[in-house]
Length: 203
Image (tube, rainbow, N blue to C red; front, side, top):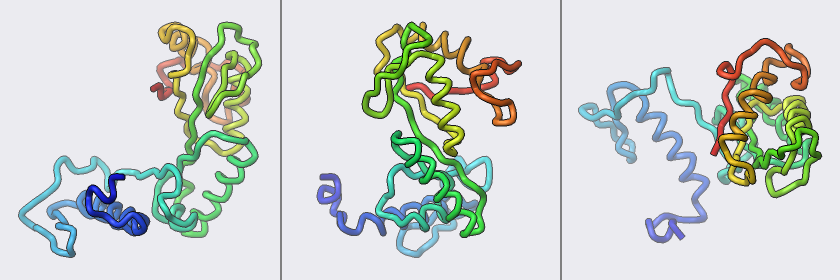
């Protein structure tokens, strides 16, 4: 719907995506502002500039791009939650293609719609993109995701039946302290990290 309203070619959205990404990266450079038609306005600038050389870019879905283009041009890839074997294959292919492109391993990201049960041992009841699940099986699932190659996980609490302060408190006390580096061992083993050393995205 947006494309005809803006006078854009829907069938050409893949090329528009690539051009827009290139424009953003040009605009982040110092002392110049691209005008979108090959001209550069030296007297204009986009502020503030990135604190580092550039801003990492992550793609969700494919954006009409090939896997090779995504691996070589994006810093990370977000995939929808799904079968662990499928996600492991996607992560491995993303990293294989990045290695072939001569860039770093990048980040592989997914999400989980969490309804954290009162009973810490409650087995998962699947729902779209997540589950109702107890704390202990959820920790096991996080370990499986890490083994599948997932670097970051967005945990969405929108489906929660419990009051959010209770869920967040349980996260802080019982889940975050058990999330650490892979060298620390299985997530079910407690270690000395404190809750404020880890972060979780909640929506």
